[in-house]
Length: 199
Ligand code: SF4
Ligand code: SF4
Image 1: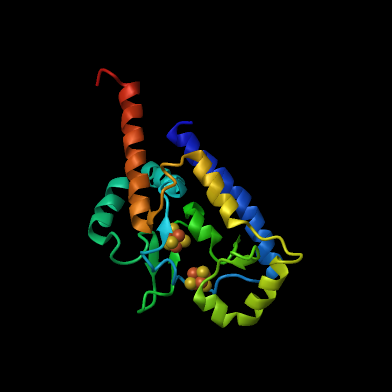
Image 2: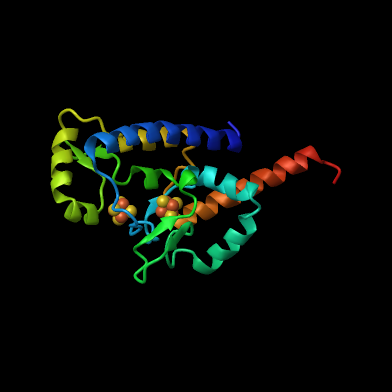
């Protein structure tokens, strides 16, 4: 698989997750608090370059790679996810400027579960939702362990790993985005070199 095909494989996986998440949200009634961007404001969130390949290809196709990389040089790991725009003073309310190309972690939070050491399913969820939607959280936790189908986070991480284990390594989110963009730039450079060997 070349890099472009890997990006397409990631996007396909996201489509599948999107369908499962949509059904889970509709049946559980659990979802993010409107306007909240608290987890996007946390630059310590871990992610892999692989899950941001679709975003990196998108930036490249829009001619934004150099601008974003320069911006990352000044901002990396210091503030929020590079794709996030805050609109509150504390930075915790805002929006994702490229929601369609967000990473795997962004899609799993508040919309998936993993097994705990006792074999029961735990929702992957933030403190804010646990507190502000405590009743819904408790009810959904019971239901995912009985009748409600919930996306399986470990399964999605495994599928990502199978696409490219090296690119599936975890980093702070902005480092992951940077590595994805650098990988795409290298790939495009060699593709152009191969297409125009005389230039
Ligand atoms: S997961 Fe929680 S902190 Fe993150 S955007 Fe949703 S409600 Fe906010
Ligand atoms: S890519 Fe979008 S959804 Fe994911 S952390 Fe960044 S701003 Fe938030």
